[in-house]
Image (tube, rainbow, N blue to C red):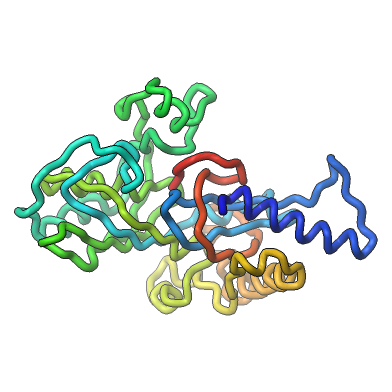
Amino acid sequence: MTSFDVVFKVRSTLEKHFKAHGHTFGRRSRLKVGHGGTLDPLATGFLVVGVGGGTKRLQKYLTGAKGYTATAQLGVETDTQDSEGTQLSAAPFAHVTRKALEEAAARLTGPIMQRPPIYSALRKDGKRLHELARAGKIQPDEVEARPVTVYELTVGAFDAQAGTFDLTVQCSGGTYIRALIVEIGRAVESAAHMTALRRTRHGPFCSLEEAHVLRTAPPLRALASAGVVPVTGEELREPTRLLEAVEEANRALEASGALEVAEEMAGADEPGVALEMADSDDEPGGQTSKRAT
């Protein structure tokens, strides 16, 4: 499923439900449904969907921190910066230590300038970068670096023999985890690419495993919205479950004070629906393309 598939399914399910109760929809009066930003093709995790008026305010409170867990492979750098790309270079990694990885991660923590991957959904001169990349019309150094903030970048499990390591990341919107992994690989005098990514948090929504951590870590304390059960892919055909999810999100956000914190960090306030699923493609909005986060 792509993010567009999810938006389409949510809209069609709810429109069918409302039509059965006497409401009419036309070409220019479709139910508004939009997502808050997608993941890389190989990634899983949360996709937040706004319904109705929530679509206009979705981005304002989702621009707060995002959370991810990722796995990286040392020794090879690819054009897409993940395992689905073509190898660009190879380098030994037997010399790499946990300390070296941790030091490299520490240097990438805080406000940094990051150059987005050319295989991403960003636009340049009206064209998606990934379209220009596939046509051979753009090189990595032609993409302008932009400011992002990495609140936390922690090295987890490290297998020195296999050359794999895990990362836990808390970052601002617009941060590319793939790019962080590539920078870490270069910093330890090797090469690296991403092999797995999972979004554990998006704005006020987070995994249950992460909720207890956020509640004790200011300024992220109030962003854990207890009581929101993610909608699964199988439930996208159930209008009652979707409507319940909207109400759950409203109640949890209001009760937790997450909207006030999000407003301070990003600038607004409107709940959506938390969806737990694998996704692929784009940045905020609901259009389909390749590699975004």
